[in-house]
Image (cartoon, rainbow, N blue to C red):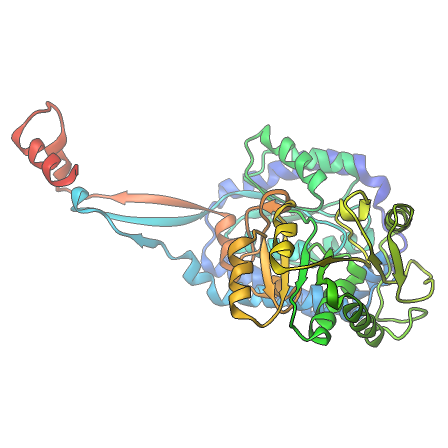
Length: 476
């Protein structure tokens, strides 16, 4: 169905269209700079109905791009949160759009103050390959709810999904409102250099630096959703079956190709063997075998498969023990593998893994585990497994990360009342829910006075008695 996608050879044509589309969207925004709530809700409703009615074809396109993607994973991790995100925005949009009243100090009375939320204009969204639907639709929801025009740059490794999404969105949005573009690295650079009113990028930290550098030429504000090495900490007394099963779900979903997947696990040294066994059992319950298993997703392409195999080879050469949980897979269904005796010299402990490899790091006391995390770049997510409330508070107080789950993995991303975003090397800015609306809006402060002007009391010439009284009352 998607075999004849005119994608990879389109880059030069897409770059030629890029500036033209941007100008069309900017002109359209200037003509209609503040769509009302009804217009925005109509667009969100149309987007919801479009996704709901095309679920199967979206599942097929994504699976084609991956070589094989579990249909249930696409439903759970892409379609469901997209639909729920739209519903959340629809329910709260009118409240978000209301001006926010602010207090005016006594020294400036009589007056009023408020914050008015305006659309920014034209928003650029650069979509990664690992969740090509949700990571396009998620930020699109916030941008449309805020009243903006949007240009989506799809990822090169997902041509079938990109073409399908372009065709579907064209059914409900004109290109001067929502446009979808394709292309390679040159296209990505050209896209980043456009003078957007806001640019959101989801991807690796290294590419994020390039995007931010390009955007800086136009002083374009950016939201960077990056990644890093998200740790999971297993406490000394949590039931290991609980922790292992929840970590295994977070790590095996999409074959580990998730920006908030657990990247390594810190385990009490005396519980190491028991955790390995509990984890092995959990993974084998999820996936009794790899061969022809429709639930197990493939690595996106041979390049990424080779990168992951390189991590294993490098780690083994430098002394790691590899514990594959399956026999060799096929069709890029990479066997899940635990890595023991790891050290910081190994690539697998330096780079974000983004695949079904899980290093296990032992610790001797809880302070050592926290020190291990805080000594490293701040991650996009952090996971703690333990039911001791004091220890939970210590984790929240003493560590920094984009988000946290206590006794779970991944699911904080699906909470539309929570902001989603990184910190430091794992990103900057937030979106999802109300935070998404705010990210793609200009919060404009407005100060209002009418006829009476008490400020005349402080006008020059200075030194008058009333001015001295003002100083006595308010400058203290």
